[in-house]
Amino acid sequence: MSKKKAKVYYEGPLKGIFDTHAHLYDRRYIEKGVKIEELLSNASGSGVDKILIPGDNIEKSKVALDTAVRYNGTSGVSIWAAVGVHPHEASGYDKEAEQALMDLLNDRDRVRAIGEIGLDYYYDFSPRDVQRSVFERQLELAYEADIPFILHERDATGDCLEILKRAFKEGKLRKNPGVCHCCSMSVEAATELLKMGFFIGFDGPLTYNNNRKGVELCKACPSDRIVVETDSPYLTPEPNRGRTNEPAFVPFVVERIAEIREEAPQVIAKVTTENGLALYEL
Ligand SMILES: [Zn+2]
Image (tube, rainbow, N blue to C red; front, top):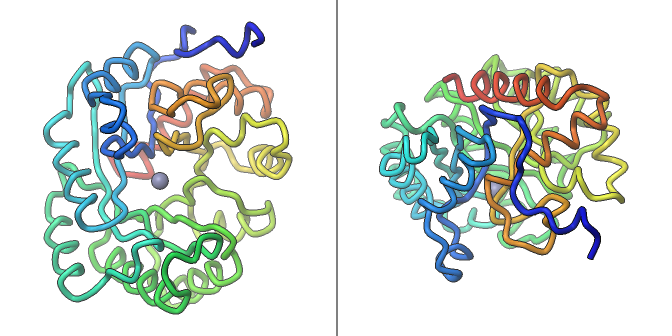
């Protein structure tokens, strides 16, 4: 193994970083016996002091919110949650789920977005027509509740943009609609999102050396629209690829963005945190 590969936690000068997307409740942590306190103390040691936990179904959304409430402030880390039904789980969306979602949205102190919502035609875990209608319904909820949303899109850019552009034209997208999380779109497609006011989320894959598309998007994205995220426990950035991802690894994404955009890492850390706070209206 190379010297670079041996690095686990970040030891540089960056501070105040916002991991805008981390599934701290994921079963991978539970199976490995990793405690949330440990993840938060690691995060804090790496200069990460803000985390948002997204939900992916009603049950996990409740857990995301409970985790945010219970652990907020632990090791000096502020924590918020998002609640929503992921396209993988769209088949389980019914009236009851919607009511539960609306109830969760009442806690605006900790619930700062609807998410993850969107379309995933790569896995197709729910039928595509169901994914589309559940996405559209939650878009309406976000608009009615006046709250941003976290977009998950994979291999469904065409349909996704069509749905969003329609909502935009009808005046049913907020000025700050939300974020394209782990954005894998082309510069051209992402530009459509930027025009509608979206933020763009970058994470581990940006550090992989075959990700030319991500690098192009990172270069093209206006600096006031970039947010950083881990998608923990998935998408571990280099030099820790192969390990379970955690918020403490997000500074490596910040450093990679700085390298691509030829900026100081401190500048990227500062601006991405400001953007994260603007995105979740904190
Ligand atoms: Zn996620």
